Structure formats: structure tokens, C-alpha cells
Length: 177
Image (cartoon, rainbow, N blue to C red):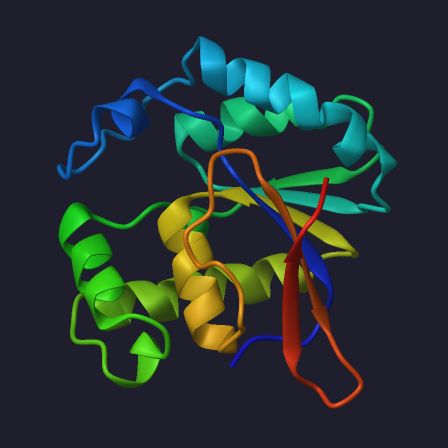
């Protein structure tokens, strides 16, 4: 379902909504908080050292702000992809309650979100690579679900993950940095 090409993924920096532990839908325009900006600045040197050719980003403010902080030294194309936007709280709860392998058991609207993410990831992977995707926890979860990777599906803010395909065609994921 996903194009088999190496890429990097980063969940946006911390926001006040992340801290609140709220299970409500997050507004589209949530900025990073001071910790989130600091997290992004701290990983910028690592991101600058990666062989990234294209940066694809969610249209949500927190992802765009993270992208702008972590990529100033990258000589890369930048592309905003609508399908990399975050899911609703209901979708998040449904996906995480289903656990790994959820794409085979998910119900709408979770299944619709997972398929939207597949479309967004594939659009990103059609760009010159390696690609860096800056998005959200729900997008990371759905991506791991689609790949069936053995990896922490819940990642913290600003934790870079390198997705690769091994010689047998299986996806692998590892945190870097």
C-alpha cells in the first residue's frame, strides 16, 4: 500500500495542548510552546546532516513551525501535503484502542484516516528523496500501522524516525539522534 522508499519522519514540537493531556480535537492553528521551539532547535543540527532532498509537511501550524525551525540549512524542496494533517480525537482513540495491525480491523472514520495518511505518505514519497515528513502523532501511528513495523508507535515530540526497507522488502523503523 505504501511506496517502498526510505524516508525520515518527525512529529512536531510540543504544544500547550500536548501538555494538557486533553482528548479533544486540536484546533488547526496551534503554535509550538517554548519547549516545542527548543525541541526543534535542538534537533536542527541532526536534520541538517541528513541527506534529505524534499521536506513534506502537514498544513497545520505546529508542523509548519517545526519544519521552519529544523530545516533552514537543508538545501531541499518544500511541499505542504493536506493528507498529512492530524486526525480527530475520535479517530485517535479508535486507532490506539485497536493497537498494532489496526488497519485490518479499523472502522470508519479511523480506516478513512489511515487511507488518507497512505495517500499523503505516497504523495510525499513520489518527491525526490530521501524525504523528510514533518507531521503528527496520529500520522506516525497510521504510518506504522500500514507498514506493520515493530517500533514504538507512540513517539514523543521532535523525535526523528528513519524508515527503511530491508532486503526482504519489510519496513524497518528506528529512532535516530
